[in-house]
Length: 92
Image (cartoon, rainbow, N blue to C red; front, top):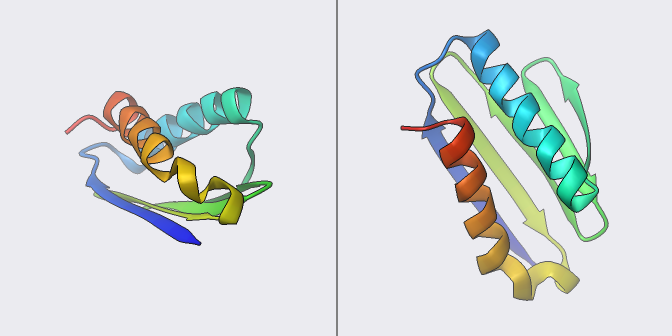
């Protein structure tokens, strides 16, 4: 089992940050068949072998992904893709 944790300052309003997170989630849903749902400022997502959450506050976005055994070998690829999505949606 393995985890991926990313924290990034977003420099956006909370509404704009949520819009960026929603855009990122919809792309991930389409590309990786990821189901997600919001509970306040926390988006929880899952698919077989992967679960996690993305949380927003006024200045930072935090992502935690838990990879199951079958996706452990793909951790570097998944982490690279997540960073790419963050770079596109939450540029520094």
